[in-house]
Length: 120
Image (cartoon, rainbow, N blue to C red; front, side, top):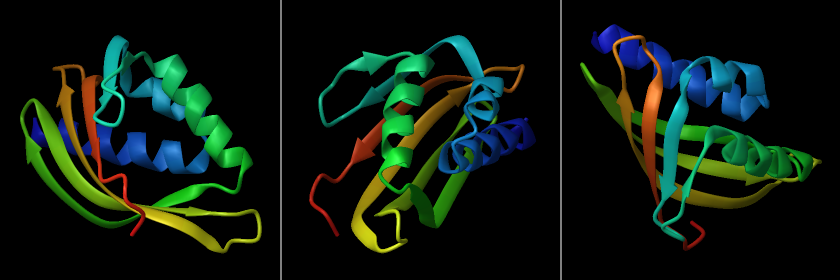
């Protein structure tokens, strides 16, 4: 089942970086919960998509330096998120750790994001 977790992680992060909202939805359970340490709030996938869409309008972002551990029921991924402006210039970088749960159908049911708020 680690293949299922890997597929969920690959699809989710690739879709997010590409602004492929249907791709994100395809690997997220309808009642999935997203949490971030910065504000401690829990959100649904549609709230995450709206926020990510705003980031895309300012230029976008990419995931770099990806390190991932897989488990039968999820994954843990460390990466650097590099934000850039419309011209492609880097505007900020953040170190992030994501801990996600994946169900037997290969859908993300919970995603907790730990973000180092100091730009790198």
